[in-house]
Image 1 (cartoon, rainbow, N blue to C red):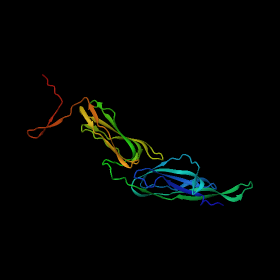
Image 2 (cartoon, rainbow, N blue to C red):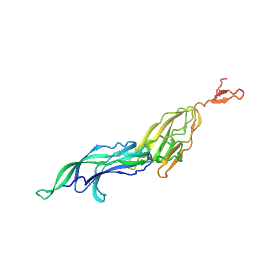
Image 3 (cartoon, one colour):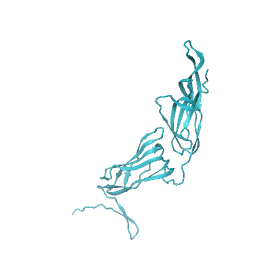
Image 4 (tube, rainbow, N blue to C red):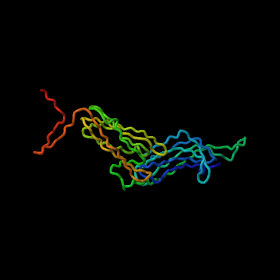
Length: 292
């Protein structure tokens, strides 16, 4: 009878063992089995917890046996699990093992009355060994003061719904980052608006997919802004900084200033300093009609 010990292996293929913090890596668990044995069922005994990683499992809709080389010999194999990992701290991090219990069919040296090789049912426990990933810190050289942890390749836009409005109307300001990287793991910058604007907390939305290559898509913070007075007001330029894995350097994107024109409504009160006594007095710039 053939033993399953030398004909059955569970391995964990790690795409990269020395990534940066928040650089995506993949772990693919493959079960290799020789042409001498068969497998009818498998059960997970222990699942990796991926401590100190953000993780996302990739759905495998159907197990398909493929051919490949392993230990210098040709084997069949199936991919049982695919996981995308984003390390959240530097240093040596452990990817815990995956253990399985398998139902296998092993051929014997006996044959039935038709000359066919007889097989026996057996169970076998296999485990993929733990793997160590040595995670690098992001460089301090050139790190922008406003860096919030974005790692990848991104574009950054700030878009107002309109820039001319009347008193009592509101505008929507969309702050959006699009690209490939750790989109769910950093905060978007916040706009700075004039004091005369009332700005509400943003509505956050995500359109992010996570294939085996890592997160891709967009995240948006939408702000509702209501001006209180007539006049022209600037919304200051915004900055977004990220670490570009392709160049190994930080990049900063700066948007243009946005000028908002409020065409109607009361004009803002302006504080004027009296040169004689140094005291401030309020001067209202709105006109007053006197009755004759």
